[in-house]
Structure formats: C-alpha cells, structure tokens
Image (cartoon, rainbow, N blue to C red; front, side, top):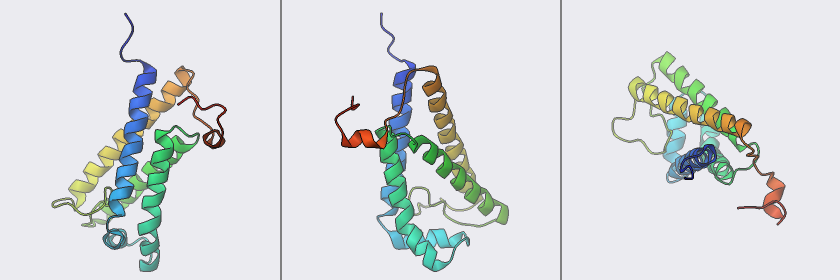
Length: 161
C-alpha cells in the first residue's frame, strides 16, 4: 500500500500554507495602508514619511514572496526566513521597550491584539513558521526537491507544475 503522507507531501503542504499566510498578511494590510502606516509608526523605528512608504511596500513584498513560495521559486524560502527573523527582532524590540502596539502582522488591529501579550503570541507564531521553514530545508536535503529558477516561469522548459 502506498504511503499517503510522504516528505514531499509535507513539503508541499508547508510551502503552500506558509506562502498563503504571507499572501493573506500582505493583502490584509493593503486594505487600509493608512492604518498600517500608523501601526508601523507606533514602533518608533522609522519616520512617518518612511512608515507611509513601508505601508505599501512591505505588504506588496510579502505578497510577492508568498506567491514565489507557493510556486516554489528558488530563494523564496530564504527571503521568508529573513522576513520572519526581522519581524521577530522588531517584536522583541517592542516588548523590550514595553510598547503597547498592535503587532501589525495581519493588517488591521483586532480587538485585544495590542500589548506585550499579543506580541509574545506573534513571536511564538513566527517561531512556528520558522520551524516549518527549517523542516522544508531538511526535506529538500533529504529528497530530490529542487525549487524552480525564476527563468523557468517564462519558458516551457523545466515546468512540471
């Protein structure tokens, strides 16, 4: 009897789930970039002018990297890991300073999603996502999975769906 759950299946599930989470996070922030700029500003790390630019740029970048991970483009997993580490550093900074801010992780503020408790929950979620990334790296090494080069999207060669 054939195995129903293989390493390649787990890789696919983790890759698509994580990619869709980044797509959703980015898209939800784009529903109200002004509010997202206020959330960014609440961390006090950048000027208001830069916060307004980041309120558009960061969500678009999240969507792009999430989509790249869903279709398994080489380098996308590394960019996702870098984003997670950056997000975790900012959250730890906010906790260290005792900031009472919205995480901003999935866009608009939800009731009760401010303060160090929710920031710690966000860090735990990011650690779990980082763990999923490490599992995906391990599966790549243990199997013959090789992500696509970006150029393969624009040619019929090497596209196997």
